[in-house]
Amino acid sequence: MTDKDALKMQIENLKQQVGIERVPLSKSIAAHKFITHQILPYMRVFRKNKTSHATNYSTE
Image (cartoon, rainbow, N blue to C red; front, top):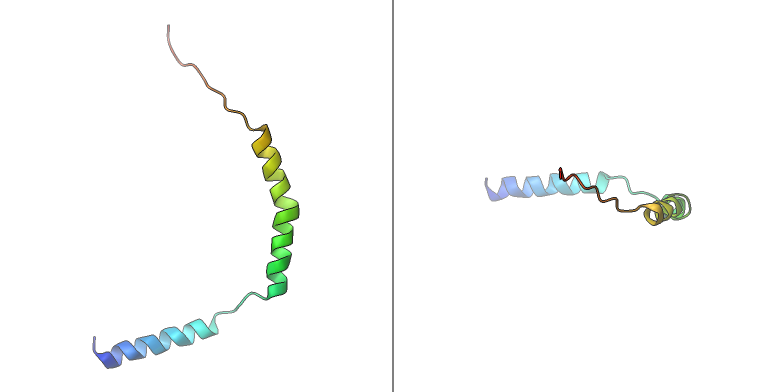
């Protein structure tokens, strides 16, 4: 690959990066609030109620 080809590839990559849609801040904040208030409380309850069950498979 020549320097010219490498430069063309870099330019194409930069064009693609510029075209990537950014998530608006308001949507990011809404997603954070949803996770914080809707999902995490259930995860905390699940972790609190989760117990370790040791099973003895010995054949004595």
